[in-house]
Image (cartoon, rainbow, N blue to C red; front, side):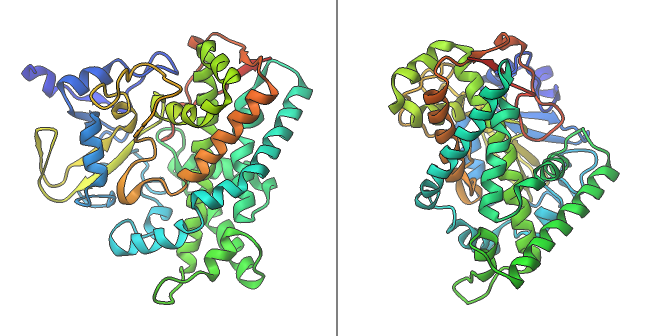
Length: 406
């Protein structure tokens, strides 16, 4: 690599002209600059990883921590307090070590594949109801607003036992937590105060009167030593599940359907062979070129990655999406193969911090896709795929809307 190329600092996130296509830089970076210097929205610099092996190594290595509030850590956005990586939620939940493992064990036992599969009939029923309403309103329709957004919110509200009628508030609170460039510090602070107060109220109500919901179970739950989660941990957990449980899945429903309809042969193949739903969902997760920010990690000691020695005080950003397009890890990585198996993609991360709700996300995505194929086999995009627009200014990637007809 030329000297000037390695000195070049890219702005991150890297934009792409097409909402469903990866930035052209990913391939160049994987090939020639696997550890690249990038400038974050805050103006701080970090090192970007784009190769599969490097991303997997870092996400699995406990030396790369989530201590993003450390003095030398790069801030992701200029107004960093109250962000999803470094706000009240990140500060109330243990971010590493034994404390984190204990928290994961206590919360994770409710997110087993078996428990999530038991939710599937209810999820399919809700998807059917939302599609009924969408069909009644007529087309063209925005699939994201009609189905992609309300379904995961309903699921997570149902799971936590909080009223679905509060979902517009959740959407706003969630967006402020996922802010890169969209909100001012005052707006973020106000939203976070409201969010914390709301969840604290929910926790207090369940303590007084337990129900059949996840919050009540978490309040009653104890670890091996008989200790429970503190109120602050319960509030942070509720916030985390609400944000992670709706925003990412809502966006993924839109993106998955968009990818499948962008080349309608993909959709037709699934209409003809429903047994491909499970592998098609995994491939949509791998193929997603618009996942948002990626995973930041902080290093307080020297470590070698991708042939580069990273000094203490480095903030690393792992692009799981760029890694998922790595030709060295996946044959035909640039092609969407609906039957791909095995498919060890990194969309949910890997290691001690891999996505806690991945069984729920998979269940929702499979349920939605199955119901859509059954109900609307003639579904198609109402605009050319190149006219689809990305969500801007948030940590998560998505489409602003997904106009469809049938």
